[in-house]
Image (cartoon, rainbow, N blue to C red; front, side, top):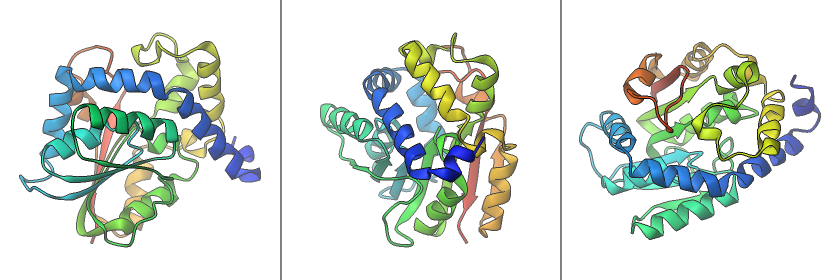
Length: 247
């Protein structure tokens, strides 16, 4: 499964980047619709509940895509930097931020190798990214590195690959805009990534504890609160939230 990754990790990452570039336009449409949906308020309340009413926090949104989390957090008074491997996503995110007059700093950057000094951010957030990474262990190491002592990591993810490898991509509203070729490429990429076979979120908790974090928790019921109704933004299988604090 991970033979291709071991033989040529750069080629695998380039393939992942190209795949998400092909999805940038449809992703922009989905995220803008989500910003105007009741789902936006649910996410806003969830994210802000961890920030204890503080303002002006330096926040890193890893794998920001078109900037859904970035825009929400910036509109609530925070200094937000969003990074994504995919140039197409960053371009669309900048377009969205300009359209709504929101000040965010969106950069094309590898989420496994963020180029920031140690202890730069108060908070690191991520949504639906870890499952796409060739080296999620490296990513966690780097996300903790760029956090300040006492800083919070919030990672929202699911075992997307396991679900889709068994069930396919058809029938889920989030993938209705994908072509057959895009669906096939998505499934091909899944099979290259070791994380597709790991037991999560148990692995995530173990890794973050290894890195010396405290208060490491995995909320396996968060999906029921984030997605109270079926709809185009709902993930129809278990979503989890990983929360950790840097010592």
